[in-house]
Image (cartoon, rainbow, N blue to C red):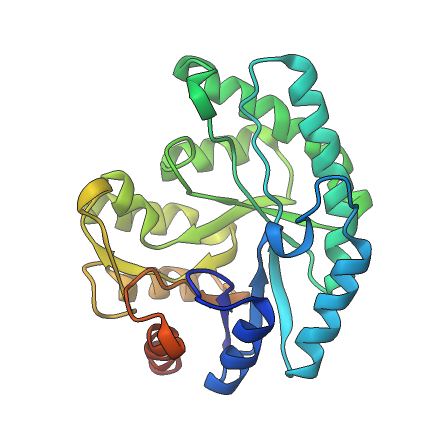
Length: 267
């Protein structure tokens, strides 16, 4: 039976309020955001992770994944070294929440500090170095197609193949490719090639790209969700089907309730 979850995101209340309402709707799992655990940059997060685990258990839920909050596009090599070390320390904490899935970014290139022709090499180096400690930490990395630096399925697959670790896979966000500007046929191609490598999902719908993007409940946008579901099911995906809602109906969890009903009927 499919496991249906939600990410703590686009919600007017705090994490406890979200977990309570999500469990009432029927969600079984919750993806935890980096800020839920590491709000204090000098705090290791162990105590907060334990608190969140207890919160989820009280509401009959569990964590599906944890966002790690990384940025591997660093102009200064010393900053990249520090970022990888922080990544390692956070990987040690994430299993305390009962999941082995790390939802990871590639990099954000804040302030345009790294030229685009260096992005690939820098992220390749970083993930190769991380692969050395993933087994010891007993975690798997689900690379998100988020923002502008990792939002290409062909590139994601290439990175996975070049890193060569079974612990590096994908967090498949069904909408983000469209936000970036890819057309729907190309996005379907990404679903096909990435499905065997998917560790976690963000089931998300909407319309348009960039400034024209509008979030919507599942089934109310333009994304070929049926194609994504079929590709994942055919590949034997057994992780959480995690709703991410970016539409306007946030109050009272209306949007997340619509997403839940769609997932119940379609996965």
